[in-house]
Every structure is written in C-alpha cells, then in structure tokens.
Image (tube, rainbow, N blue to C red; front, side):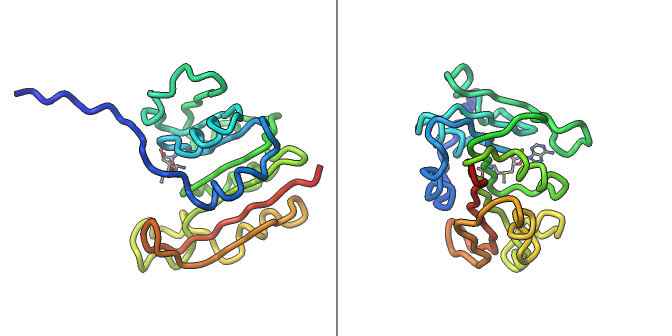
Length: 180
Ligand SMILES: C[S@@+](CC[C@H](N)C(=O)[O-])C[C@H]1O[C@@H](n2cnc3c(N)ncnc32)[C@H](O)[C@@H]1O
C-alpha cells in the first residue's frame, strides 16, 4: 500500500521566553520572525493581531498558513551574502529563536522600531555538553546579546543559563526595547 505523505503541520509550542514578552510589543505593530522554521512564533503573533513577516530559507513548514491575512512569507538564504532583505524597514517586534548568524546581529538591533522590542533566544557556549548545536559559530558568547544591544536598546530582561526544558541546553535570551 502506498503511504500518503503527512502534510507538514507545525505543532511546537512557542518558546515561553518569546510568549512572556510578546505582550510588550506595541499592539498591532509589525513583527519580523527571522528564521521562522515552522512558524511557531509567527503563529503566536498573528493570533495576537500583529502583521508578521516570516523569513526562512525553508518555508515549507508554513504552507498551511499561505494566504493568511497579515502574513508575509519570505523565502531567503540569510547567509548568502546578498543584501539584507528588509533594508529600510523597521518592526515593532524582531523575534528570533534558536538561530544565530552572527553577521546579522547588528542588523536585527537596527530593525527594531522606536518603542519596539527585540526578543531573542538561542543556544550559548556551553551547549556542547548537551548536544547540537556545538559549532561555536552557532553559539552565543557570554554577554553577547547584551553587547550587541548596548547603547541602542533598553534591556528589560536577560538570561544566560542552563535550562532543562524543552531539553537540557545552554541558552542566552534577551528582551530589549528601543526607547520611543
Ligand atoms: C532550529 S530552527 C528554529 C526555527 C524557529 N525559529 C523556531 O524556534 O521554531 C532554525 C531555522 O533556521 C533556518 N535557517 C538555517 N539557515 C538559514 C539560512 N541560511 N537562511 C535562512 N534561514 C536559515 C532553518 O531553515 C530553520 O528553520
């Protein structure tokens, strides 16, 4: 019997860190979900009434959302050296989870509109003991999110720690606002 492929339906819950600070984003302001994957955070913000630009090299996990009002899907290789696809745009919320391409960090800070928020969470050095990613290119250095926001955004919360859930990992995370 031929098996019908199961459509990719993304069911992962949003990160508690991103959820915690979602309400700090100005209401109805535009969101950039960078390296969105299956779009767990794009979905969160759409449900909260925000227009969302969701970008990833692989947007196949978002096909069930195609045509949803307020969603702009952008298929882009963010590491190809091509110009930044959102040049000249700012967002009320710049959201990144479990993705790091170090050359973009300053761009992400610049992309936060006055009054807007950067909400970022990804793996940090020390994660090697738990599993992937292990490549230091993909792991934040101690204080790195603080350093990149310093002088630009006001830090509301920052953590650099080992978590147990959803799996043991070393993570760094920040929620920071650009003063209006
Ligand atoms: C671990 S997943 C995180 C997905 C999502 N942010 C989340 O937390 O559910 C990393 C994502 O980065 C994307 N990615 C990796 N390299 C990329 C590149 N060069 N350009 C754009 N996206 C990339 C992958 O396709 C994948 O969706």
